[in-house]
Length: 285
Image 1 (cartoon, one colour):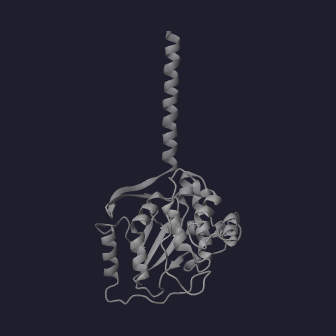
Image 2: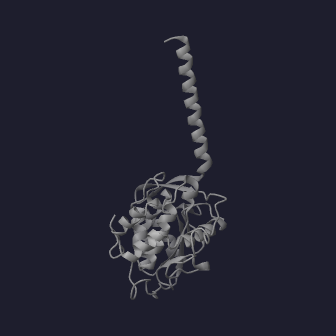
Image 3: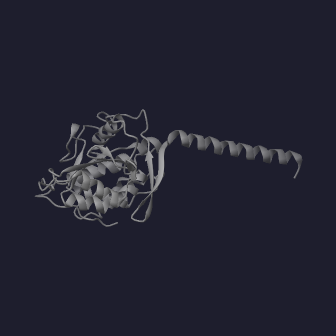
């Protein structure tokens, strides 16, 4: 190899190295990880990464995403909470989640059965709030599209089942597969009775996009560290409560302590889109 060729080779390698460094710097600027830990839950290593909200993305979506239409049965301030469980349950579990958030999936997949068990026993009621911070941090629209689809499932009285299906089938964080409405409709087939013309129309038209954007703006304005944010009666329990890490055993203990000498709830409202009420069912994975 001539001296001239060797100089060219070295120059190319330096250019490639600089490009790789610049790419890494850009990724760090777009994605901020504010906490990372490993928590043992049910013998599994659950990676707990709180993904910070992306500053400067606040938008109530009222203009770009059409009229603000809350899903059926939404409650709370500005109707931004999707309620699940007995209205008179002694404790409230508030969960802020993003369907693209891997830490949210770790939390849900590890604690799902326990949360359902306590909810069905009237020990807790749950208020779900949806955020789209991964779209802001990573680019894409999968957080928004999945949240809209989940709101459409709420209209049909199938929120819990579809919510669980989305987390059981969450794509890798860089893969914006949930941006495809066809994929979201395909997953609806795993929930009995959900894949209807009404649900498909709701998903494809983005009926609840503005509501999702409003919810995300409320998340950003709330001063939360990231997703998932999990509060038991207003006190954070994820990834820790005090000096104790979250686990199935600890979560049950915390609920028991919060509910001491309080009767379980029994008043259940009729589910949206259905006659009477029904308990959440475990969906297919």
